[in-house]
Image 1 (tube, one colour):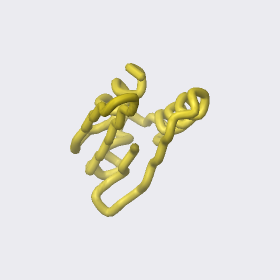
Image 2 (cartoon, one colour):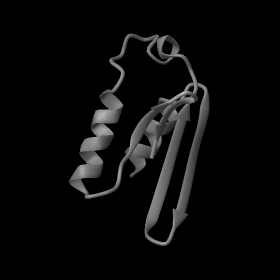
Image 3 (spheres, helix red, strand yellow):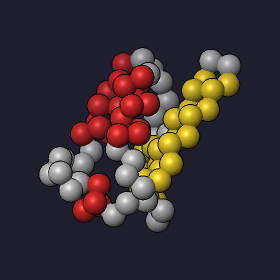
Length: 76
């Protein structure tokens, strides 16, 4: 869980990271409105963090969603 939260902050250049906890459910919402070139300015492959998040959430049978929208990528 801490790795997913850390990655949300590390990979949000311009936007919000919202963490909500209710009962046994934790929702981490990551909205980055930075242009793609700015998010990738260090030359890192975009999507590696998303792939790792997908693997972790699958391993623990947690719900995961990632959508590209007009206001940036939304990861839930």
